[in-house]
Image (cartoon, rainbow, N blue to C red; front, side, top):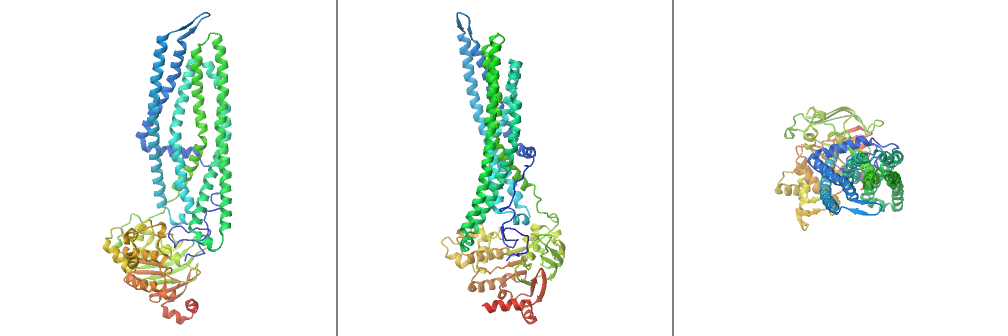
Length: 620
């Protein structure tokens, strides 16, 4: 049905009538790994802007983290006091038990309070992350809903689903597990460094000697980590796209005995994902051990320098204990962040892919603020010297001109790739023309709001699109305020009422995905009933009866005659028997009108139409 000379390597997405064919840029070959990731700082700022939308939760979580960090900083000071209650002389050990018991009691209270703060911090962090991700997912879905048809024609289902699920889930997991850790780490580092300087500037300087080495090593590792996590996410999207295509096209795969080829293709994609995942995990996992090594070096230097100072009576044993604890607290947050570095990089890579979709230019609608009443549409459609191509290199329609008066039935016939479905895409403004003009009732359709324009058009496509829900809901999709009586009346006009009544639950029968628990003909009947219920001013029938048997087709033709009465109708058909009653038949070839007239007059011309007609009925 769809033209083969449309944009190359495009995938059938959503309703037919759009460019179709092979796997698009979202399939194999899609998203070839980029050597340089996008700006991580910019991505992080955008994530923080989402967190800022839940200020109360964010402030509450930061307060809990701050209080929890304070309890951690107070602990070593109390340990120092407890140790220094014990003094050793050459002959005696003296312990101030009153001070020791008081200090140990205070330590217990501080640690219990810390546990309470930690619990509330975890609860607030989980709530904040889920609320943030909910807003991000809503924004992404809303943006996808407003993207032009061309975007979905050039991206696979699986690749887009990967962004909406896997990438957003990566962000969610990181926010819930790493956000509070990052804040706590920053506060702990500042607080620990302050206390270290307070107790011994010299030991602080010694403990920091190994830090520049660690930062340099992490910088080298991070370059590799970001690259491979980016490639891992892109390969995952590629795999999802391949799986989605194979599931929807399973019958075709089996019919052509291509199972082994499909398995081999999947294996190649899976191997690529495996290799990138291994590299990402290896380089992401190296950061933690490296930082642990740096921490151990720092701890060793502190222990040696502290022992020398204590031996010379410059500091107490309690001070050394406290300093060692603060030194661990100083390096521990760095190690924790390093251990979560892989998760953070994965989240940033996922967020980049999400924001790429959000930054896609939405469908333009220059006429959205112009007044438009669907009830006032008459249905006069005029194409004047229209040129259009899905790519700039190849025009599908060339100097295309037709003048359709309100209520006329126009049939479009011709070989595959002639431009029939493209005419439909342009009327509905799924695509905009390269040059020329299209008017509705004398008004350029580019000046009309797209929602209003499309609301005045009813479409019945070759491959029906049904949604999960009941039969009643799917028919009501044509007009949401329709009553049950109107739904049944529309079903009767479409000759769908009879088979619906035979179902155990009738109109309340739940449909599985894409209505797969119904036959193709039954699904088509529901699609026709939906169009009847919508009561459009302009009707488009794109191979509407191609999936229906001959007997049912006779009933549908009667319903269509009633449906088309008084409406401007565009009929795309390969079965020429279905368009005999059309007012005008346009024969298209190579994007141009080569013949025009009624069924009888075209047969007399003995041209393209006559050849098409003879071929069909000679086969019959």
